[in-house]
Image (tube, protein in one colour):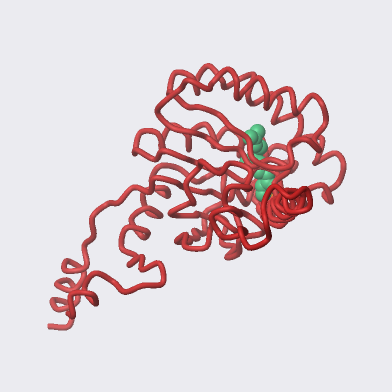
Length: 256
Ligand code: FPP
């Protein structure tokens, strides 16, 4: 009897598959993936970069419109210099090697972060990549590189303070809408869902302002092993969440 009742409950809780319009992914676990295979960390990052291409295809095919991935944080500079160099080189190589595939998939590429502070060769990749892909329509891939949520907020504050000092705006005009408009990519919708593989359960300075009402799903698999099955699993979990944005659920509003 117990078993039968349980099955009914599971059937009752079956949910529609709601694909997020805007998705964030923290690509974590490259180092552990490499360690499990007795490979250098650089091999994990390379496998991680290859997997990003798969994620783009899978998200585009499912109907995601904006995919933001955390590729290099403002804190990642504290890693050993050879690892930082690997990540920079991989970044340059990646867009040279994969841009034609991204083009075939209709994927526009944009970059978010303190791009001005990056070396010239990286800034050039960002400039060329954005320009070359600007008319692609299917999905936007936003690569957060030298990105930190706190730095984004500091830079937004500085830009607003400058406008107050110069008399362009008064301090009473500062509201949430204005702050949102000073984020790196204000036209990109806040993420509906943020996924973090590798079992860690924190945001690590990713999209601090934009994630106010994002759903958060963590999975145990490591980033290079995160495929379509894992993506669907995370979206299924998200689909079952009751997003109330601080208000009431539809059922509560109906008085049920
Ligand atoms: C975190 O895993 C991952 C990173 C700091 C880098 C993410 C970069 C990539 C997936 C590839 C580069 C991206 C582009 C766009 C070319 P970790 O190294 O901290 O893993 P660990 O926690 O297992 O050590």
